[in-house]
Length: 121
Image (cartoon, rainbow, N blue to C red; front, side):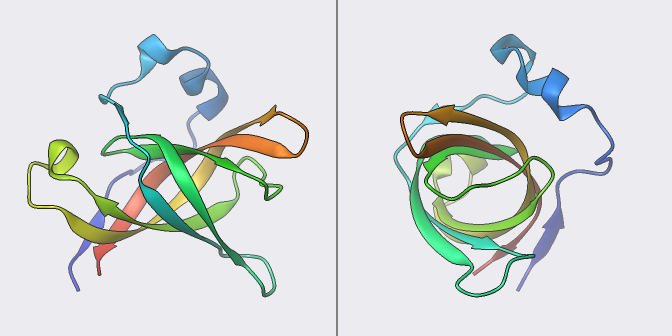
């Protein structure tokens, strides 16, 4: 397996970063990609499935019915498309952190995750 580090400094104010779309440094693609989510610090069952709202080389946004918290470590496996990576589509397992959570509807949340590290699977 090949591993990659994507972010060096985790002490950034992510709330300020995600408050305005125009501040994003990477192009996001609206794409309903299937996601497998694994919560790293929770007891079993600690995994779920979701669908991406949008994705970039640095993170993903999705809707979830799991109560997630900003700063929580998370692992997401998804098929990363060629449009984002410039390489043929491949399954990747990303380790990251929840950077924003906002309620939508009765029991769902819009969740943003910053990718920190990935492995090709």
